[in-house]
Length: 228
Ligand SMILES: [Fe+2]
Image (cartoon, rainbow, N blue to C red; front, top):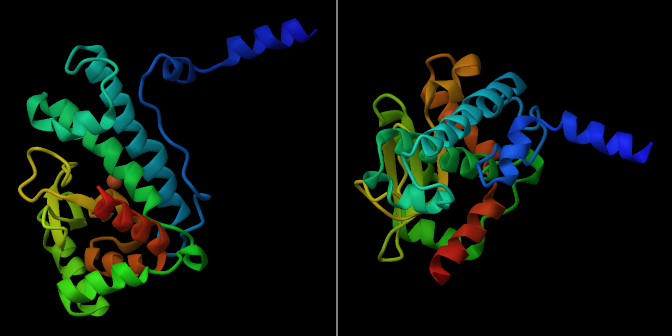
């Protein structure tokens, strides 16, 4: 009986799960329930964004690698860092996979967002004047990104905080990025991130989003970036 169940389990294993064991990229689980960030991000938006959009970056990246656009087994971080040396299909889909994985981990339910560390608070005040001025500048950069893209808080190579934005699925870790650095926080300003709830009101989405930013995670990233 046990043997039969084991055989059934193997037969029932989806192709994606088998492929994962052979080193392909796979969609990470969300670190919270799909409705956990509601009303800032609705369950419907989260379900589509994670289950359809992020999944398609993963699937398309695996296809690109299987068809020889980049060497199989290359780490995601290396694909991103050297994005300019690969065809756009790798740049766009490796970026999409990295950015969305980072994005899910940048947020938490409103009652579990933690606190900004004293070190990060001090650095934000030094760079932007105050937390409020930082938020305003971040929102403006997000609203001002023409078309699809991302807005970031990064640590630059002088260990200073800086706000930057990137088009499409680029990010500040890429060799092709105009402004490079270590991302601490990123918000997705593609319409798929907000349109169902906010329609064309990107600025409203950017303002609401602070309620679900995981400051505990962002503070840990800041510590890690300075230790590099
Ligand atoms: Fe997205």
